[in-house]
Image 1: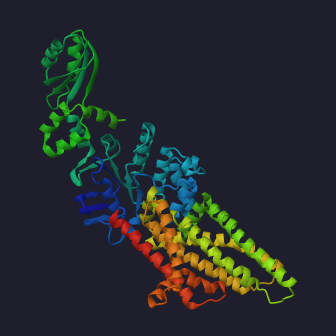
Image 2 (image 1 turned 180 degrees about the horizontal axis):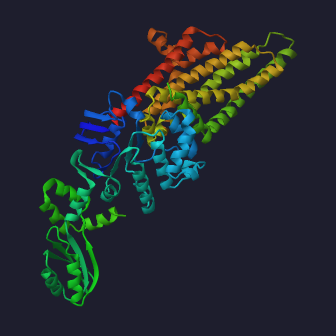
Image 3 (image 1 turned 45 degrees about the vertical axis):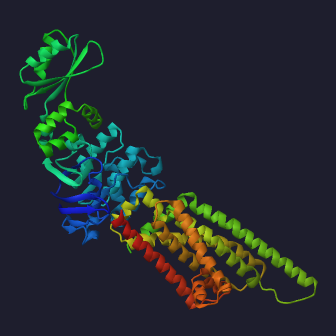
Length: 334
Length: 255
């Protein structure tokens, strides 16, 4: 459905997208994963014919984005990062306008508006001014706008950014429900989003494709770093360390200052592929200490990148030592 | 051209859903009303005096009221036209809705023509507000209808030309204030360069004076439709729309 070969976008001073290639089959949901400034938006803008590529080719539904942009535009629904809404319009009027703009036959338009507003759960605000809507509603109106002409391909640029957790879940469900009828590319910098909504992930950084992988494989990679954070109520750090080091499957124990008297915290690394958490829990409880916390330290996106690019060792080391990564992880899984 | 009418309707909706249309029409009504009142009052005063003195030279409503009023109101147009055009593209560029338009299956030209047409229709509505006052002249006097219609036609043509230029200026920036100010300055320049004919009678002076909109509006206010004036305004419209199309296109490779 989408075929990209050596796509490149150069600006005066920088190359935003550097020779990327990928293919997306019909009906798939593909996550475009990368940090901010990786070239996700630029790639999407080239696919939607908003800007021409400086090199390479891109084909959507069999039509070249440079040679037959009109055909491509008819078959693409696009939700930019900020939904393109007119605040002075009512939701119904807006969908009517976009429908006409996208060439929905006027006989079908009323029916299509009804369908998409039910599907995106905006039917109850159809007579409201867009400027009065909450952010979640605005995002859904943006999605309704993207699917009004029933396009083959849906391109969604950071569809959940700026939403609250409940809205994020609703939006993800909505996107998943759209998958059967449409081929979807969505961009995000949130790893869990890709895990929850997509089948395939294309990881890009600095304008280059780092990896194209199924989400299942990505999940394995992420869980592969089997480091665990252990917080124990105990007086002596040494005793706990000794005990933890003796647990079978543990390869390394690193003390982390907790700042509170009577509480000791360790990062424990296990041999790869082995779940060491039950063993650790047993060891701590049997020694008569209270176990406050025991949780796996997943890898952040950056660590997955590192792992993908520079091999397993470096990434594991990074996961074990980089303290800020824990904070990032919490933010991501909101 | 599919889509142009859709966009035009949407633009008109935005003008009338926001205070823009009403502000422009109210301001125009106010200042046109003043011009009209002072011209009419002067006319009435003069005709009383000539009657008292026993002179009976013919007093012409067309020449003494309508013509100067039309010339004056075209000056007001200079202020109003940038107000109408400044948001056309600048607002869409700022809010990001331009992405929706450009990624829709409509041509750039349809977008531009749609927006320009909406601006022209709003300007027509504004001019009709002025026409209301002129109708009163027909109730109490006997002005000639044809020159009045031709005068308004000229006003509309001049407006359409400046609106096309204003639309182009709006495509060049995200900032409405810059678009408005630049539009005003360009309109004003196209107006005042006519003054050069007063002190420079060389060919250069003539060419520059020819470029002034006032040179080409004046015959219309006298009730004369000259092909060269129509051609001037129509080519200005084409120039403005052409430049807008190029500017919108450049958005793609610059953005």
